Image (cartoon, rainbow, N blue to C red; front, side, top):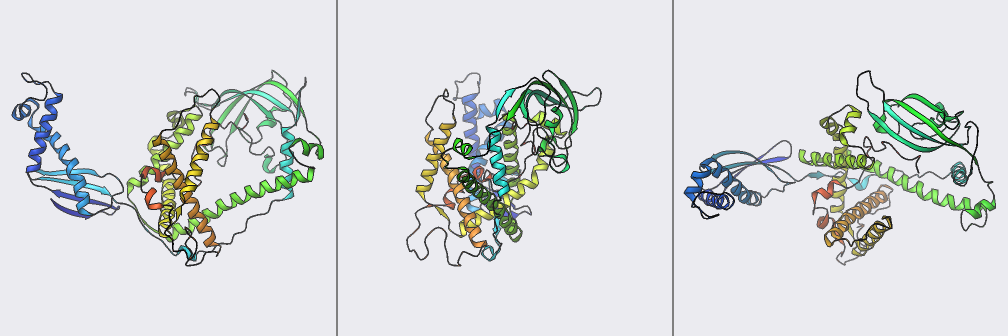
Length: 501
């Protein structure tokens, strides 16, 4: 076997592989036997027709085509091994310049190469914000809202009431165009909130748009109302940005809401709290935990943004396409949960599938670069996950999975393969968490140059955990699923049902 290697600019390699003629003759005979077994040849039982009869029956060109398929499957892995290249994924056959002797030209994507900067020298101030009294007061008000006494009233709706209304919405169309439904008709409760925020946004992140409930003030049961609304470009609901919609509203009922008094008795109603002050302290603890978690996510983003800028990357175009596939599949799943199809979504956004892929490309590149940085650091730092952590997290996840099933859903044991796949995903997640923890500690100046996050300083014991090389390289599809960044996917908030909850 003669192999010529040519490195291409897009981090792929072209292999020109020449072999002796004899293997092609052997492959032709294998192909003839396969054809004879599957094809009815007059005068012969299946699989019994001789080579020259099969060749005459199907034609020399068809036989050669199948023989080349057999030969390529044999030659390709040997060529990869002998060339010593490290492929990212399957290559493609680009050309067959000759069949005598057989010559094949393959183009193969290479495994990504990452050259890190000095990530241990990075320093970023760690300054999580403190929980304010105003935030605690807001949480208390939300608790009061949930315990409101609701009673039917026979009068027009006013601020503070709860109004149940049937609503639907269509995309505004020019005359003659087909109607596009944005919101299928549904019955939902709305709490009427006054305009107290900036730019008339007192009702906050209300669905379907900020300030919607204000349009219900003054309406009584059985009243109907139509209104037009153009979603702004900064709308929380990405799929509707810039859309001009026509809403159709019919009020079903109006109910008053009386909030409980904020005192010690109220605190007792919320749980085992001695008094209102104890409830406030509990709320503060919860908010501090949430605030810390949110700040750490932002801090992680800052670290990764800087590290990506300091890093040199080489990766093939197939890696981008695979990540785009992952994002498209994620969007399709989101749409399916909202009873929408990709075709309807694309029509709403007036784009085709290629335009959607082009839109996802920057996101895909960002995700890949962040993944590669974390993967490379995890390898360099020899970060490992103790087996007991994997076992514990896997058991917890399986328990949560069963708990999420409805009582009438049949319980079935997960297959060994499914559990193994789940465990591998958990290993990756834990590896990412540990790597990010190490980077946060380093960026705050709390990591010594000699410190190894996977084991105690000075320990001579060989680590017994699961290493990144043993798991992150098992399945490249698994790599593309790591959620390293919070990237907005158009349609993620499409037809949000926050009001329904």
